[in-house]
Image (cartoon, rainbow, N blue to C red; front, side, top):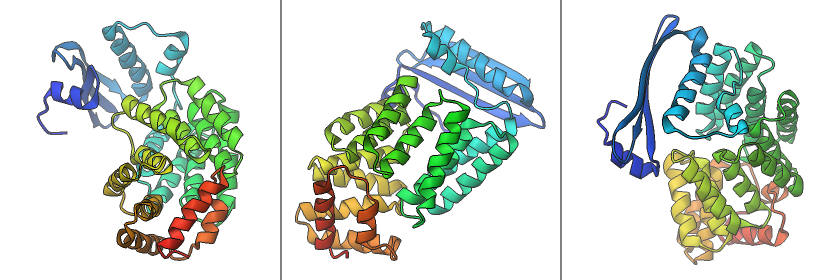
Length: 341
């Protein structure tokens, strides 16, 4: 934003052939949107338009812009792809705005931002009680409380479970609802159901980058980290502006496949974005132990204790959802060697 960019360089960096750029300006109840579609290889303009509309027409405008981009690209969509293209989560603009703010907070992966995300999703549901995606992501905030150790109350996981099921009851074709339910099944140690829900997610939308990355996450915990690496890298190609948790999934997979140097490099990239992300510190500790770098392992163990002083390794052992108990024992053996009890 506000910087001169070279289209060809951006296209090469993101690994894409076409770029959509534009701006949005809001004044009272009116909005002006300018957009143009550019070929990143030739820098030629394929399509451009300016729209001045009432805010109440914003969803129909989204559909119109999406259809014009498809026409400019001269691609043929399947019936399912056409449905996804014009899909609306809600007709309530305020609810949708709260939902989008929730997404921004969610991707920060901190305890404080998770609380703010929850408030945004709750507001979205208050404004539209049939907003399935808001129920799903409200459930995700409760899931993160449990899986990231911000809550010791098992009811956090149960609330996530109930909210994901509520989302599916409202819209069984919503990929993210099945993805979140799959994550909850994983942490309930119902591994096959977890995999089934993520496979359904991808069947509903084969290009759902988050769904593909989440399936990679499930496979890490269920004993197939080699395949997880390929899936997470595919998700990164589909979404070049991927959130930090993709990197966590990749670093976890590298650790599980014994690629410790790559795990360390990737987990440090996670911490560059979120220094307080506890799992990255835990698996850095173990990676350093595996490489015999005990001083660095102890330094990471100290960070773990600083971030989670009340949680014992035994409490983690009861919670962590590896299918193979031998992997769990190896992890905790490394933590003990680093001085964590």
